[in-house]
Length: 479
Image 1 (cartoon, rainbow, N blue to C red):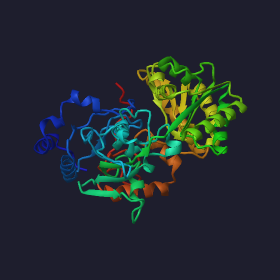
Image 2 (cartoon, helix red, strand yellow; image 1 turned 60 degrees about the vertical axis):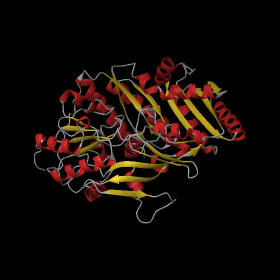
Image 3 (spheres, rainbow, N blue to C red; image 1 turned 90 degrees about the vertical axis):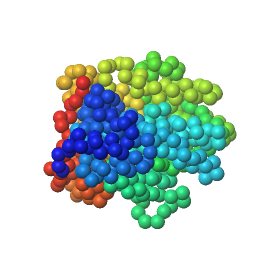
Image 4 (cartoon, rainbow, N blue to C red; image 1 turned 135 degrees about the horizontal axis):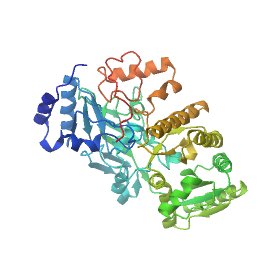
């Protein structure tokens, strides 16, 4: 890959884009140096913020011609350093492509640009009695393009699925700027399932410029059953018991004592501060279904030793109980200068064992951890508390996080549920995949991006092309 002439690249970009769509000043580029995982930072060569699909296309064609690395960025809420810039490449911000193009209430679909926030889709569809199912905790800010890139889920993914289950088609630009339509408005499309391949591909295979999502009818009724448990093991057993009873909750979330107390201090949701673990189980459907299922869940929790049970009495209380859960990340952020949010997935049957081991690792590394996760589908989100100004604590936090990912693989899970691999989990990929499997992933990457210029250094460890696939500099770039 030849050295990039920054001045020449800037001149070419100025011919393609209005001046206000180019960020060349170093200080003005700093907001783009990282995503929400702030322990990894790097300034790009240049930042561009195109306003149309045609401008994105022209930028990609230019970068492909010049072999300039391109890193796509949505709202910057990612948690795996997947949108961290390349020091010799272009940061392609898609936040200005933020139009809801069409809501089709009959087909129950929405066509949106990638910069539209997750929550804005539901807001746009609300007048038709519809909403968009996946709801990450950052849904007020995260973009649908980023959700596609990471295959995001959320607290209601147990019943309604991840992003991949809720999209119908993508408009995609290849590395060379060619526009492709992946998927269709039908229930299926001929040929290979490229829609599933591209969802969760982390900007390694192409740039999404439009998404068609499925919309769901707003349920007639919904209730949350909140239960405090005297032990983490009891709460973990209750998770499996709900599913075994034939109940499929809309959401089934778990928080440990530290997370519960932080969330209660922050949101005042009415959580039991003395509980060692908390479960939030939401059931939805018709009024009759909800009433029956909520009663069954409450009785089940009671029989398994719950120390307290509260069932939401109205929509306001239901929203408040979820507000506490969705506020858990900022709430825990008040307990230490920094936290490191992990993302592994484990079998539901292993919840108790894994949480016990995380507690042991916490003592070993001398760092507190608050556990908040999607218990129904085993998606862990341990929040490791540390001080990023202390290099030793940064190293211990990384080691602690790596140990949690290794543990997830050991018990039959995987190293990511919805945050992606990015740069953060690159070193754990060989624990999850064999050398042959990694080679196959590399071949897929090369089929879409032969020059290895789309989001280089992320997602897939390139086994044979180390010289072409430019390594990123030292990992610790925290200010």
